[in-house]
Amino acid sequence: MSIRVLRPGLLSTIQDRGRHGLQHVGLCPGGAMDPVALVLANALVGNAGDEAALEITVIGPELEFEEESLVAVCGAEFKGSFPHNRPVLASAGSRYNVGRAMRGARAYLAVAGGFAVEPVLGSRSTFLPGQFGGFQGRALRHGDVLPLRHAAASAKFSSLKKTRDGSVRWSAPPLTLPDREPVLLHVLEGQHFESFEPAAQRAFFEAVWRISPDSNRMGFRLAGPALARAESDEVLSGPTCLGTVQVPANGVPIVLMADHQTTGGYPRIAEIASADVPRLAQLAPGGTVHFARCDLGMAAELRQHMNERLAAALRGIAWNYGQ
Amino acid sequence: MSRSFRPKAVHPLGDCAAYIEFSEELDLEVNALIQQLAVMIHGRALPWMHDVVPALGGLALHFDPDHAELHGAPLQAAANLVAECLKKIDPKSGAQPRTVEVPVCYEPQFAPDIDEVAKKTRLSAGQVAQLHVAGDYRVLMIGFAPGHAYMGGLDRKLALPRRAEPRATVAAGSVAIANDQTVVYPYAISGGWNVIGRTPLEVFDASRQEPSLFAAGDRVRFRPISGEEFSKMQG
Image 1 (spheres, rainbow over the protein chains, first blue to last red):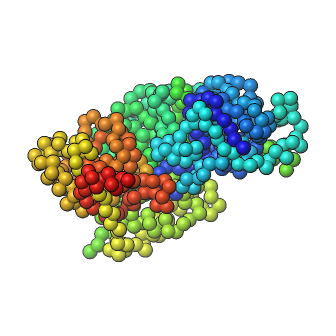
Image 2 (cartoon, each protein chain N blue to C red):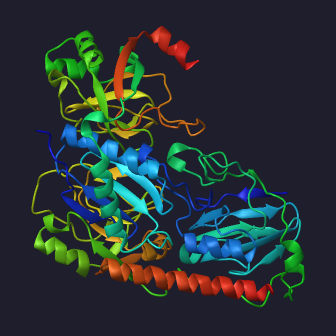
């Protein structure tokens, strides 16, 4: 079983939930930028939530299914006719061919059984800076043939009532797509928040920030007012986290994303609540955000809210499959 | 009397991690204690703990705040864990650090900045290499990139600031110096340190059982090799 790459798209990589437990040797967990959409796509084809899928970014690929495959795409909506947020039985020789992302920035294409690539250091995620994991440690290229593991979910799928395009009438809800911009992100004050000028502290929460073009899986740069520090002394290099907002000397904040560095020597002005990071991951360059203060209690509530919505969506999928 | 070590602060690093800070400055004794503490917490293999990351002046604990076996407020649980381990640590009886020997070729083809370093320090290129080899180094922290070790112990005569203009790419294995530290670049990446040599060793190899050549706390010695030896070792 395999998928042939006819056009790779802007940045298509194999990603799962990432590799934990190696940050002490400088390796961040990495994995899907929007893990919520990854879990949904996997559930729709009967995979475990942490199975590897194809992360598609801003401009989609053209793929050909060499054999009949059960597929689902969740996350960003791309221009094209492929059904979204639902299981699709793609016939042998049929294609997944999409254009630009219309809403959101990243989608996850999961295939029943998963991709047959070897885990590296406990994960199938592609780590681009280190050129390992996923498919040959890199983004897809024209002509690649992605091996698939044998699928077992098709039998369950065949008992479902289907539409003419080989899909079903129901769909999973999109949980991470921003419905309006600027996207509101909740943040905790970072360790060095107080070391910024009072004007910069205010500007951080009042400004609308735009994702810069030089943003990637390592970090998003935010265009807006320059953030000046009241103290000019350097901070001791310290640990960072997914969602850390750090500010280099030029005053331009950088949000650390999935493939971030594990330590950094820049002052940390804020930390984005973990439940809000997947929604940020759904913004492409040009997208806008603003920040609202929160505390650990509220961050926990946001997490709980997201977990409940995800659990409800997963129950809905299971119910439709008659489980 | 021995010093008593207590965290200065516990900072939330978002809602899924905590930074237990001991010092805002680099203090070698504190740094060594942090490494001992990290090994101890790692050894506990707690189901809710994802990562234990020793840094220069403190350690980060990355956890699943919703894990069933994590009782109470996560930040408090992290602080309690550190306090509990601190009680059991004897700063004098830490495990003997291992010594990693790193062969380095200091010849000009691998050392684009050695002449400039020599000029600024009023030494010859040969003396720069000699002083670098003579040092007894310790890994203070791994960060910036996988396997990228910040090592302290550089001879003061070699202390120079970072380059004003960082290089777009520094070759993998490049051995570089800045201020009072030395590093070995694990991959070809951009960097602003002064490159004075190169090792043929793979600093980080994801296919190895132990992917990183260095760990925080290691002692490191550099051994000079010729260009010929370099080629042979690289295979």
